[in-house]
Image 1: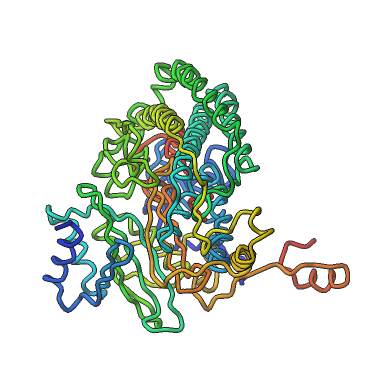
Image 2 (image 1 turned 90 degrees about the horizontal axis):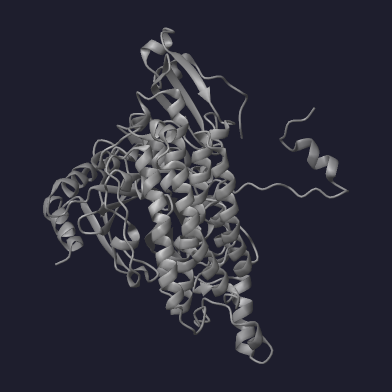
Length: 173
Length: 410
């Protein structure tokens, strides 16, 4: 039995209610968890010497707008001992999106969560330094949300050069 | 959407620095974002007690270009071009990571020849990136001549890239399913010349630095971390290996046929700036070994998959095959659809674990792309590893992490 199967069984045995779904795709396993179960599940995966998922390899989010639950926060754990990746997903509601921070278990979650907070607007409860990280501090909106338009620059031709120039935001004299 | 300009309030500052700074006992100093030794647009808020850094607060985002958002608006093949612009010293490595993710998502096979060429070019890219590290690192520590030597050597590698792809840096040469075009006939000779010529040069650089007392004084014991700290802070690549973490994705989770090549994973013991330098020098030698073996067993055959649903047909077929014309038209106007599920692929970039999370939704555009970049993780750990060191050592620490700000901000 591979370490991934063992990990999935351990999570299922300990958090029967907390496991919403186990996905298999192209040989990769992703466990969809309720947010209450996340911290304990990660602690278990990290500290169990049989599993030893000691590394938070990646952390990101996906926006399924307009469906609910709107967001999925996606965690990738890595076990150096077994050279295996395990995916975890936590659904988060669109109205006031909040989910617990993974920082108590993996310190390096801090910046990744700040990035998600910045670009998706998901609040991580327990993160010690939840500020914007990539966008300016006074930016409005969360650019990676699906209802946030992709910006572009209008092309200026001779006939409409001045008209576009007037409303174009840049440092004028 | 930016509102009026606004200054940082004292309360916001309070959460970042210690009470002593508010009272004026320690000094707050900005380093960057236009400082030459921050390797890009990185701003550091330093809290100094005399000459000692009590705390540093990295401020990133000056080079944020919304690559992930832009990729969502392009087809899978067109989005590839954005990956070159991410880590601009590891263009082919980024291409490789993204291509592997797309190939995994749509379940596409890559011919043997393409895989081996990918390995050769990715390793050349690793050498080029480490050469820049070496040059800029030495320059930051006031050994200016090495900078010029390293750029001279790197030029040979860029010439090889230009030979293959037509571009020196923004190559976009690896495509989902293989390569953009076959390698030119002069490729093998050029690579052979280069790998024959570089070992002597590497030795020369080592003579300049490795036993140089000035260099050793400024690097030994600076920002030393343990293997546990490295793992805890999500560090990977040469920085973690210098601390003794025996982890290289090329060995532990081989991709693109790395399991066929013999090479060693150099490890350090102290985790300090000096060990990071030694590890990178040794990695260049190991990369040369891989390239040598790969050139020996470079197979013939097709350079990209012949699965027409994902890879455009060759130009020669368009003249006489209606089906080829249809495939060509469909692929270049609409692109290919990918299933509504997600994959995560990690490769070993010169800076560490480069991960690509890719999710499709059944349409020809990626629903979500996320790059887990090694420089981002390294900068996050930087305050931990530079507390208690002198301001003058900060430049050594930054350059030893080798952060690329395009990689951090994306």
